[in-house]
Image 1: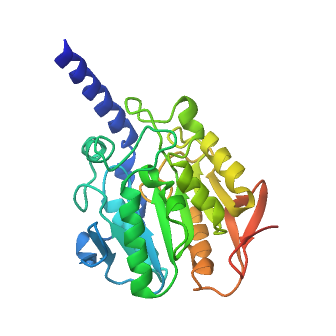
Image 2: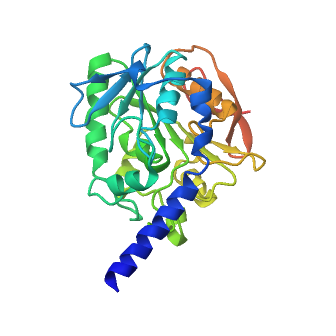
Image 3: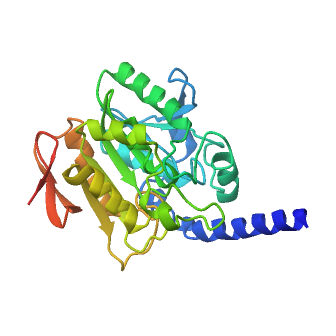
Length: 302
């Protein structure tokens, strides 16, 4: 009976994960920026995690945190797209192998292991400490501020990394905490950010502006979580909610949206000093108003 129950749960989880990844074959970022692992090189002196860097990147650094399937081809393609906009892009390998795109395997390598807290309402994942060290070493190495982009499983992680040289944060479809059987947030999980109170307070103390992204129809990143971000960070956070005519989850990778990408790029360019003029957003809003990122790197409603 016990074996049968475990087998059922694994089969149900596998079916759910397959449905989550069912649209991944579109790989829109890969279509926009064709790339392979050969376009990246390992960097061996950035702390406790393996880190890869896009070879053709230069300029201020972005730390790109990959999604649940692993460091997938679409995630690598997003890094290549960002490097083409004038950034040096670093990708820490959080679990698995480069180019991995296996949801069930990715789940057991992350949520089922001690480095990630995937269901707790207010507990930070231990791997955040390692990411903090990676970011600190990149800041020391480049002697410039860096940005962090989190996606899906890692979507809210940039909040915990703010300060100490991290001067820009993009939160793409934050998914944690979630129900491990249904593979989506339920109940109070919908309103939580999956971070400890200490990490939330750390994020509140700094004044760094934030950009958060989701598809309106995405039940993996519920609207309640966006409401929580607004309540905590108020006018520090601008939001992109891609309209209901477009369906997807992975806003900048598998289900890449060009308008959301350009808003993210313009935000990052101003924050990291590549642009010296205000940039109006295409989709992002501050509250219910159109907005721009100003010359001094803060949001302003229009």
